[in-house]
Image 1 (cartoon, one colour):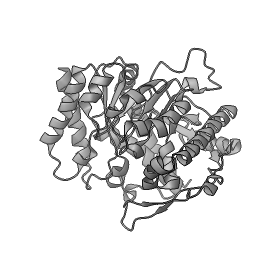
Image 2: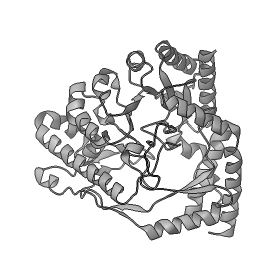
Image 3: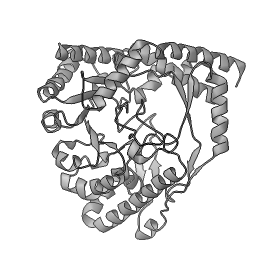
Length: 411
């Protein structure tokens, strides 16, 4: 690494270490652990700018020159930015995670896409699973671990950060199953819906193959000792963090993590426009099978779950449910009560247009009051934010309004 890049990164790492040592970080961890154990002290708030980061922190703001150094710089600067700007419950950790060098041979077929001509525009599907003969081309991925490359990464991180940030090694910590995303990537979204009526056996056969594939991948992770604990700030489900004292189990071996020591999740947002029975038949029955080995689970993304909660609540270990902008929050509040995490995803569209603060406040208050009336364990997760119309202060103000409404409901 160039000396200039190294100096920039170490300066940022020192700043992150200072922020991570603040008492507020430990307090947030404590609140998250209580929240995730269904003993909340207040509603929790998280911001994930996602697509908005390219407007908040464009590449032009990075000072490093080498690509790898710029990636590290971006990570550190985002942590600092979150601390300085967002009034949410993000825990700024004082560590650097090295990812094990894990590779996969893939599924044999990879879905194609027709790219948009517009910057960050929508793409369309280019199906590759068109006949039963194509189904025979699918393969179960083979997983491998390059131990030498992992050791190289660890050595480089320790040399760069060792006296500033704690360096930890992680393998597979975020486990989330997206079977319908895989199927539609191979087959196309409209064709998937047609298949439910015209080719149900084909759809079932493909899903059964995907399940076998994912089970083999998990078996290989265990065999190669690639699983890592995710009872920390690891992103959980489709929004939320994993801090909890409930896992790992008391008999766990720190040198051999098992599925029963972990969170996992699944979602089928591609089924937002189909009925509960189809969701159960073509997705949930398979997702349950994949989630069964894990201790705690989450479910859902953008699909509105409120008309199919009876099916979803039978998912093994279910703890966190995604309540999307299209869900009926009152029904969700009544059904979930104090027994599950109400992982509410407010509308990201409020960040565009007029940015009406009164409308945002009323919208947040309405759901918070419904949750309070039913003793819900609610978290507000602002995500899927593709743009803030180049006005980053809107994220700041949204988080401030959310915090004010949480304080009001708790007064």
